[in-house]
Each structure stands twice: as structure tokens, then as C-alpha cells.
Image (cartoon, rainbow, N blue to C red; front, side, top):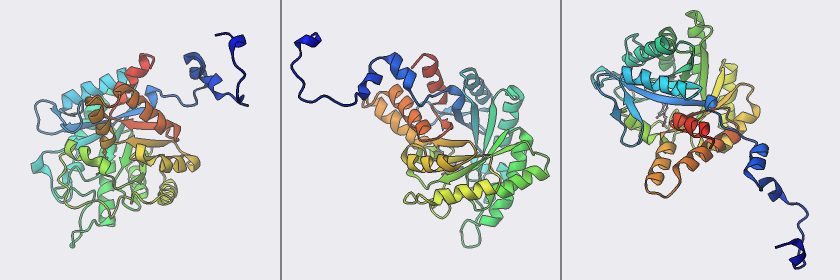
Length: 338
Ligand code: PBG
């Protein structure tokens, strides 16, 4: 139809935003948010005492690795251009105790894994370690308990200090205290410095909510949590509290800060990104992954579009770095021009 055939328009829009959506090329030109593999961090699980990698049934495509398969997976991630790797350790059930001792021992599974990864990869990637006791305690809490069974904040800090030094000695470039104890960043920073690890950075979980989205992770780390984490993780009802946690973490020496979960907390992420003067990360957690996988498996959503859209949204809300179980998959989609 030519212009001349047109009937007179009833209304003529004053502005036509659709002009900038007409072709893929113009959309690409004006896109304000870009995903890049280098911004993505792959969380990985390494389990002690297994001969073969084990699937995590609630997270299709995710494995509990042996030390050997972990190193292979990390090499694969680096080859795909992924920016970093966050390592979680899964000890033998028999090695768990009330103090999470195997989390601080140099030959505990997480520290062994960090050593193997650093040996294999050197400085070619950023090696991050989860700094928390929950994977290593028999009660499953992120700290040690007092005589009444409550998580003892200050006694836990001592354990975190030891853990930070053990992880740095094992080769972590970045430690990620994720237990939400008050003062954890200060204690970790001081312990690292006193042990000569001034260059090891602290990625502080500033805003970490008590979320149902961690459900599949608990299977991945074979957690035996008794009770819940509501006395230390944040209430999903609260928003400004995250700015308080951010202020404290920055004052205590955080090099990077994180918001977690990511997708359901984009408002919090946006608040934090607006004021933080350090890089902000967000963690697309296990439940966010599994929800996409479950819906995609049923054919209810397009997996690849969901992956890229969810990660783009997290970046748009202000995260510079995104931790995601899709890191390698997304990197490959991006390399293929998606
Ligand atoms: C605590 C920790 C958890 C996650 C990361 N670090 C579990 C929790 O707080 O219960 C969850 C990550 C995910 O769900 O993907 N060490």
C-alpha cells in the first residue's frame, strides 16, 4: 500500500518510538544493556568421596563434580569466555560436625578444589570461594550454635576468619562471605591482611534474603538444615535494610557487593547499584534456574530466550557481574550471536 492509498488518519502520533525498533540493526544499535560472557560467573559444586560426577535432580544440567571433572568444567567455562568461577564444597556426611571443621582444614574438599583449580588455571580466571559454614556443619546453619541452639554471631566470626585464610592460602582470588553475620566483612578483611593476603578481595553478600529460591541449592550441597535462616538472612518484606547492609559492608572493606536472589529482588539491586561505588554483583540462584528449566522442559517457555532475558534484566537493574548456573550456556548463545 502506498501513502496515497491511505485514508486520513484519525490521530497522528506526536512521537513514534517504534522507529527505533524497525530492524534488528537499529535495535542492536540503541540497546542500552549488553550481556557479555566476561560479566558472568559460574557457580560450581565439588563433592568429596564420589568417583563420578553426580547430577542434581532439582537442577537439570548441574552436577556435583569430582575434583577432576571440576577442573574440566572450569577449563570449559574459561574457554567459553566466562569471567569467573564461584566454588561450593560438599563434604562427606561423616566429615560434618557442629563447628564445620572440614570447611577450614586445608585438605577439606573446598580448599582442595581451590588448590586444584588455581594450579590448573592460574590467573586466567577469577577464582571465588563461598565463605560460609552451612555446607560443612551437621546442623546445616551458616554459623556455630550457642547453648540454646541459636546461631552465635561472634563465635561464627572467628570461624569465618579462619576459613578466609584457608581459602586464600588455597588459591582463591576472591572470598565471598555469604552467612549474613554482623561484622563478617571486617573480620574477614582483617584476617586476610594479618595473614599476608592483602590482594585477596572480598565479595560481600550485602543483601541476602531468606528465600525459597535456595531450595534446589540445598539438594546440590546435600544440606541437612534444621529450622530456617530467618534470624540472619533478610526478610523479603524489607527494602531499605539492604542499603544499611551495603553501608556496613562498604565501611568494613568490601571490594564488591552482591544482591541475592536476583530476579525477584531487582528493586533492591537497583537501589544498591545506584549508590554503591564498588562493582555490584547479583546472583541468579538455584530456584531461579530451576523454575526456568521446569517451565522450558514442559514447553511453556522458550529456554534460551528466558535465559537471556532474565540475565539482561539483572544487568539492566544495575548488576555489573552476574552469577548464574547458565553462565556457560549463555556465553555460547552470545557467541552464536543471540
Ligand atoms: C550459603 C549459600 C546459599 C546459597 C549460596 N550460598 C544457601 C543458603 O543461604 O541457604 C544459595 C545459592 C543458590 O540457591 O543457588 N552458603
